[in-house]
Length: 227
Image (tube, rainbow, N blue to C red; front, side):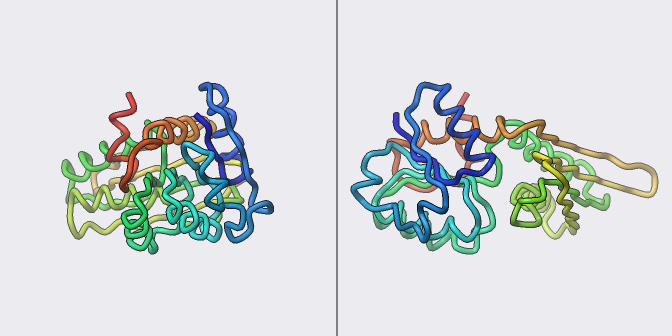
């Protein structure tokens, strides 16, 4: 397949490397080459089986509008744009496009989300909090993954209060810690990424999955189908 990767940041570069490793052709566009989605014309997009976006919350919306309006198949790893999700969902439906989005494409994080729900169900009377640490160049805080963990906890126990604390340090790839505390003890559920490869591999496999599909999915809905 031939994939278009939007974003020359650290994660975008790893995505391109892994796509090559898995036998795909790759074209990478940096934001300086694609201001306001100016490069994403219909003839240009028609070359690609799927588009993978790891840009910024500011760049991703114009990119999505251009790709979905032309019926492209898109994997979005950028976070910080979910207030526009319903608009993007409607656009994908009108144009018969494919959209797969997610706060985190790591298989380990998907397992952590499931464990978070079980923990909340097991000790719903405990006090819950989330701490997240990422690299200093990450634009959004709290992270999308932290917000997904909070949502997982609250889906298991509606009304559960969960405070999120964000830290931006060095080149940290991603650390998320859920703490459940009572007067007698504390339980911690931790996921730490050692590199960006786990996220990138999941994104490439997501692109392989969506390249011939029309509709909108959140990554957790289909991650079990990737093996």
